[in-house]
Length: 210
Ligand SMILES: C[S@@+](CC[C@H](N)C(=O)[O-])C[C@H]1O[C@@H](n2cnc3c(N)ncnc32)[C@H](O)[C@@H]1O
Image (cartoon, rainbow, N blue to C red; front, side, top):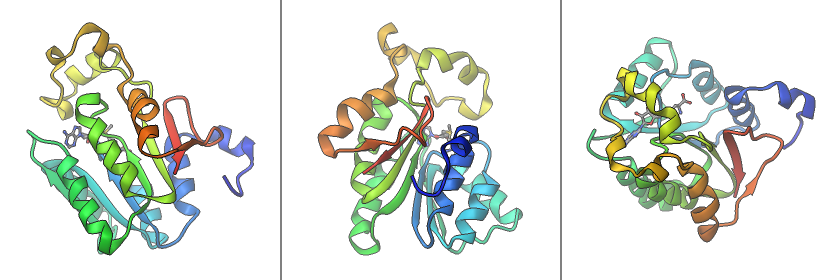
């Protein structure tokens, strides 16, 4: 990591660290897998300011909600693209589509992966993300230590996640495992060597350099 003193980094939360990484470059390509209920206006303003192109993946309705919220807040969306999938599916098909397109349009400098957080849904998408990232690019992975069991009560009462998780599909042991950590530590290294940035990462949010 360049130009940031360790003391400053220690004070930064996840969103500020993402903003720091965005601010380090110009005209780069940023992919976000999983958009969430709240569009991050400051992040998108920086993306616009630094001439990035941005692609966001989520369910169709979440993509539409982000698009109209950002437009309403005055973010120019000419270098933004949102690719939605059906409620019954996942962003895997969208990622494979991007892999085909990457031959012409190039790979990504930064990929922020923050989707379903389960091995069932996210193993293949994270593998495709590893392929979509440029050499030297940063894969940002959220909810590294997340488990279905720990998230269960919040998810069950959150309308935004209604129908997104089927807790009955998992054994007790699977409910208690950190699926994203398993993918990053047991599957991704088989595809490519990534280096964890120990200064920029947080316990539950990792920066992996390709
Ligand atoms: C934790 S939020 C992402 C937060 C966001 N990256 C941010 O920085 O605020 C997870 C997102 O993943 C999406 N997601 C979960 N499962 C999905 C699936 N099967 N297909 C598409 N999107 C999915 C959810 O709709 C949700 O918007």
